[in-house]
Every structure is written in C-alpha cells, then in structure tokens.
Image (cartoon, rainbow, N blue to C red; front, side, top):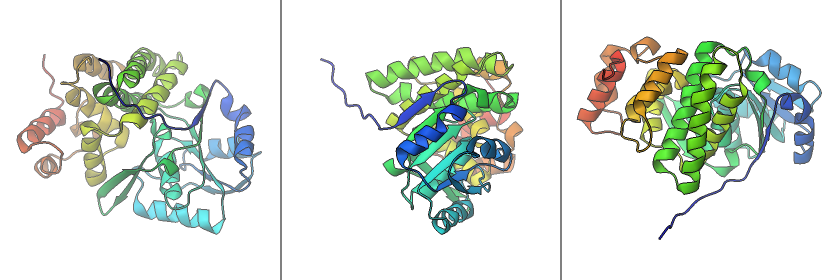
Amino acid sequence: MRSFTRNSLPGRVVFGSGAARTALAGELESLGARRVLVLASERGEPLARELTAPLPVVEVFTGVREHVPGEVADAALAVAERSDVDCLLSVGGGSAVGTAKAVALHRPVPIVAVPTTYAGSEMTPVWGRTDGGEKRTGTAIAVRPRVVVYDPELTVGLPAGITAASGMNALAHAVEAHRRGDPVTVLVAREAIRALTEGLPQAVVEQDRTEALYGAYLAGSVFAVVGSGTHHKICHVLGGTYGLPHARTHAVLLPYTAADAEGVDAGALRELAERIGAPTSLREIGMRAEDLDDAAGRLPLDPGSARTLLADAYDGRWPA
C-alpha cells in the first residue's frame, strides 16, 4: 500500500525569455512594494541597475560575497533598516539571494529573486551565514523568495566555467531529492536531471540556455522539499571552513557522493562534468593537501570514509 508525506511550499515562479524586463514591475506592485533594496555583486551591478531602473528602488547593495560572511550580512541588514525597505530584490547567483535571505531572517520582508546562474537557492527556505570560518545553515519560510523570475536571456554570456560548475550544483539538488524524496518529488527530480544533463552541454557553448535554467528551477524546487543531505553538508564544511568556491565544490564532489544513490548513474555524472569542463578535483579548486586530515574530522562521515572520499576527490581519482 502506497503511503508518503509531502510538503508543498508557497511561492510564485515566472519563467520565460525577457521576463525580467516585462514582469518585474507588475510582480513588485502585486506585493505592494514601495521601497526596494536591490542586492547584487559588483560584477552584476550594471545588469541589476538596468533591470531595476524603472522600479521603486531606494538602495543598491553590491557587497555580496560567496558563503555570506557575517560582516556582509550585517552590512546589508543595516542598509535595509536604515532605508526602511519593504522588499528585497536579488539579481544574480546564489550569493545575491543568500545575502537577501540573511537580511530577511531578521527583517521579514518579501524577497523577489532574479537568478542569473543555476544555483537554485532562490527556490528554497534554506539560509546560510559564515562566521569565524564556520558556515551555519538553517531553514525559515520567511527567507524563501515570494516571487522568482527566471529569464534565460540573463544567463547568456555567463562564462562556460561558471555555467558548468553552477549546473553541476543544480544537479546536486536533484540528486539529493531523488535519493530522499517522496514519489512526486522523485518524479520532478528525474525531470530536473534529464533537463540539466541535456541542457548543460548546450548552455556551455551558448546554443541554448532555456533547458538548463528550466532544469535548475526544478532541481531547486525539489531540494526545497527534501532539504540538505550529506552531500550538501560536506560542501558547506569545505566551503565555509577552507574558502572553497561553492558551486565548484559541488561539481567536484557530486559524482563521489552520488555513488550509492539508487537510480542515479554516478559515472554518467562524472562524464558530464568532464564533457562540460567542470572541475573534477579538489586540488584544482584550491583545497590544500595539508588541510585534508583536518577536513576529514569535520565531515558528517565516519573518519575512514571521510579520508577516502577526500583523498580520491583531491586527486580526482575515478574508477576506470
């Protein structure tokens, strides 16, 4: 007899080419937003200002950084409170929406997210913050964006390396959901894996960006239901403690952590990473050999498994 429990989270998604330029004003108006704080990286500031020029923006915060350092979160919150904002609008990748979440955790105003990568954080109630080299995460419905506007046009021109790593990060969301989800979530996760594995090779060579972004949306939506598993916990430890780049860490580790996931071909994930030019070793993304023993003691694995995983992933060793 079939029996399961499924949580469905509230939220609105607008998906389509050009949507960021045609839909934002109406979405903000429907939320009653009158004083908007825009959050973007320095690299993404020109695009953010272009998209939000006709909107009721009172401040633009461009200090976002990967892993949401505590000082960045506090600075963004201070701007939000000083400007008495009633809405947060993130434009960019996971760091931008992560900073918006850190603000909303203490100032619960709605978030509207405009992703420009395949990070998927915009679909989840998961927040993160790094203080003193330790990354803490949690969940709160208040930090899940009320509206997400997906526009494939905004991912055109994204460097191939970032596209590849960000896409593998999205695949990690789908694999986690496939491993631990209810029947409905597993079906969506399978479609996310299909869309990403078919779409990413096209995206890295700028043939088409729509399928990859569609897959990233689905992957983020199912990850929002199942939450973090062992893979993500490992990546958070390595990223927060040793400063490794978030998406590239996911790209390296996913084939290893997916090896025992039922219904997931870990070897195919490794082949995809190689095909699209994603990193395949911890060494190439900045992990130091002298930190491996310390890292093994921090991972949510038994010490022997942790040491084996890190040793293989450090050198990029993969069974022939």
